[in-house]
Image 1 (cartoon, rainbow, N blue to C red):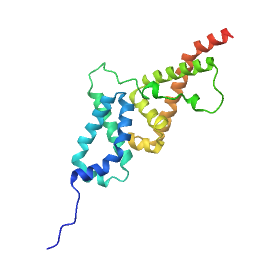
Image 2 (image 1 turned 60 degrees about the horizontal axis):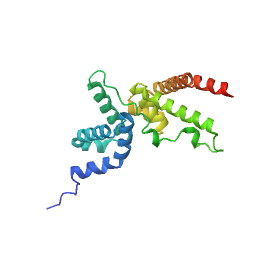
Image 3 (image 1 turned 90 degrees about the vertical axis):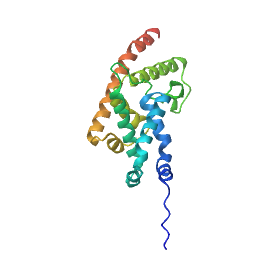
Image 4 (image 1 turned 180 degrees about the horizontal axis):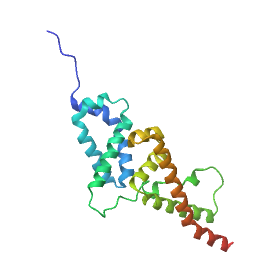
Length: 195
């Protein structure tokens, strides 16, 4: 009598496949929802839906973008089910106190107090403007500029042609640049008047 080949239990197989991706999924969920609680719920929803599909998961060639696509679609479904008037969180890039303004990451001398104030103001305005973007625009910006995803991978996650991703990314950046300039202009004129 031949012994059946050893096969891991369904839960062990699922854990082996999904566990390495839980932290990035939770980070992505938090960036989408802006809430620790909502992010945990979103990841839990996805994991619960995927557990019965272990065989399908094992056949996925690159699980990382596939799981992110599933999570993003679940997020979109959740947003569509919300009652009208309930806004998506403005906390697009995480808590402000955990962010490092881009200009502070550049090497160089310590900025003078006026430049430091200008950078703080610019960072706060940019944070607010990103929070005011449409969810699909914010998601695209988060995936590419914050999470560092390649445009090809984003196209796969969002199930959109690569050319569309490129043009949308260009448009959302131009929109942010224009709005930031409009918001900073009165402050910069005030600074010039003080000099």
